[in-house]
Image: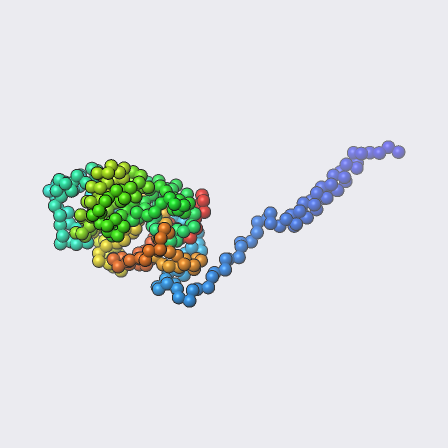
Length: 361
C-alpha cells in the first residue's frame, strides 16, 4: 500500500506547533523575571533619629512627598516666573557692574546699607568688567551648585558638567576626588568677603596663595559683593588687584547693588519677608535668580540646610569638602530652601536631592 505523505504533513505540523507552544510556555513560567514585573515594594524608610535637626522634620516629610512623584517642568509657570523676574529685576542686563553702567564720577549706593555711597574713581573703575558678560541669548541648561554635604557620594558630577552654564558658590573645593560627585566645569564662581577674611587673612599678607587657589576655576567669572556693605569694598578691591597683578586668568566682577535691591523688593512684594534678614539674600539664592533669568532649564544641586539626609536620615556634613560649622546669622537658610522647594513643586526649576543617575535629568 502506498503512503501519502501529503496527507500526514498537516497533523505533523499541528503536533510540532503544539509542542513548541508548550515548551515556550514552560520557559516563560520558569524565567518569570523576563516578563514585566509589578513595581518593586517601596524601600523601607529608616526610623527617625532621636534628636532630628531643629525645624527640619516638616520639610523632610514635604520633600519625601514631592519626590515620590516624577518631576516635570511646567512651561507656563517657568515662563511667567522668569518673565516677572526679568521685567522687575533686570538681571539679564544689569546684575553685574560694568564700565558701561557705572562710569567714573557716578555714585554707587550700597545694597545692604542704603545710606552708604561711594563715588566711582578711576582706580575703582579700572577693576570693572568692560561690558555685560552674559550673551544676548538664553542658555538651554544651567546648573547652580551649592556646597552642602548632601552632594557627598551623589554621583552628580557628570550631570552638572553637562550643563551649558555652571555656577558655583563661595570658592568650593574641586578635584581631590570630588569631581565624580560635583564635577569640574565652572563658568561663574562667587566669593563671600568672609572667606577672604577667614582663609586669606583679609589679603593683608602674601596674596599668591589666594590667587593660586583660583586656578581650579580657569577663566570663569569671579563674582564678588563689593558694594553690599562698606567693609566689603576694600576686601574685594584687594582681591581684584591681586588677580590682576599676578596675572590670573579668572575675571573678577561685582554684583550690581541696584540689581540686589530690585531682587529683594521682588521677594518682599511676594510676602517672603522671612527669607530676608538684614535685607540680603544668600549668595546661592541670588545665583538661582540670575539663572532663572538667563536659562531655559535650571537645575539646582547641593542646597540642603539640615544636618540629616532627607531620604536616608543619616548625618550630612555642612559642606561636601569639610564640616565647618555653618554661620547663618545673616540668612534664613531653611526659609530659602522652602522657597526653592516651592519653585521645584511648581515645575519652575529642578532641585536635585539625593543621588543622580547618569543620563537622567
